[in-house]
Length: 122
Image (cartoon, rainbow, N blue to C red; front, side, top):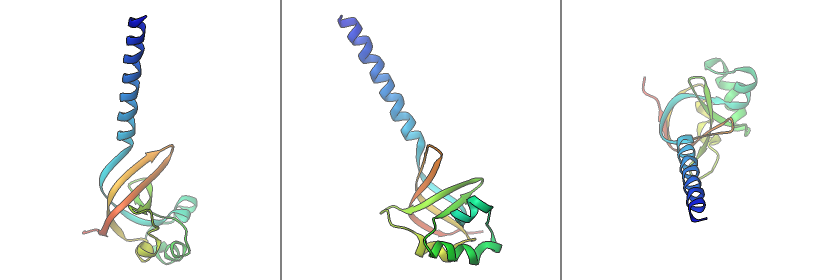
């Protein structure tokens, strides 16, 4: 009986360790450089770049989600204190910035909690 319990306990510890490793792999602290986008227009119409700057800024100011396009991945952006970044980043839609914070990826959602940001250097 004790051997079965010990084996079960060993399996549970192994599974828990794998779970922690998976969660840690889904979050990552660092910096990412990309284009600030209006997530709604970008997701539905592919809108980005200088041709969408004015419209995107209006949408973000109106409360639609703001994000950063890094390669082919769009990340929703929120501040590390869980406040919207809309007012701060609306005038930077279409611009390239670098954000620093923690990236989370889970169930198809991509999010960066932003500790700091700055205009990217070319």
